[in-house]
Length: 334
Image (cartoon, rainbow, N blue to C red; front, side, top):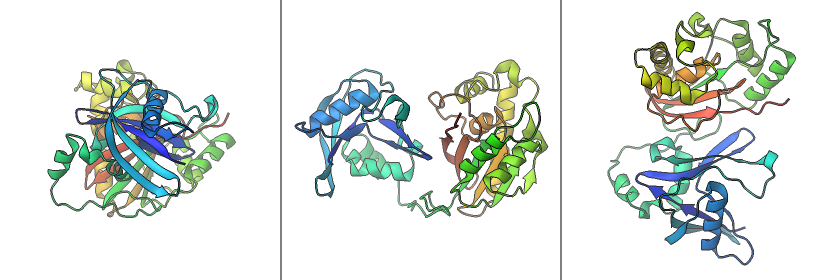
């Protein structure tokens, strides 16, 4: 089935939508199937309005890519003026089955190699200023290498997944059966980790074991937030507010703890081999502060609520520099 999509740019940012199906997530241009009797250009404008709640005007076609019989992908440069996009919906799915989960202005360096590849196919090079940007990138080779779990993660990138523990039987310290089941689900299909680190609380190291990974190290200070942290922001306020607290008070408890966590992750990355992987299991608030410490200038405003059980962040390091970060969300039953 043929599809149409829209390129909408604002400065050096591109309007992107995030899709989630099961455990898989990806960013792409707003777009979808061309309806019977509909022109590709009209389909691109309609899909943009459905998914991003903005009305657009086609400027020109940027690309037509044919993947097979009756499977052409048409892309158009579209102008939306000063309208502000908002998360819409995909009418092909009911309200409980929506795969459209986010809409955001994105820079190229915030996207994976995989997602950027589809932008090149869509003709982004013909849209100013992106062609000139690429010409200034130099000759360094950065073609993605195949990671242990079969994905393209980037040549010599080290990956750290930092997740919150799974469910426990409160007020006790040990996992509930529901928590064990959730951790098994979260760990299913993950490639082995070269290093697994948890806090010293039972619910943390039991989570790693339930996910299917032996624990190599326990770090006591990953078990709790420092004094003064929750005076500045609640532990469950979400990463957007935690990042804002760190920025607004650089010498406060939140900012100092985030910097300590950032250094911890950089040291962990340095211990990994090229394309190595590490798993960290800790607790609510600590996971969010870790992300802020590793990527303090990242825009976390649209990342949503605090991480729930087994959720967290996946961080990509080139050497000891975190070059990309993305959220990990897990659907919790019941």
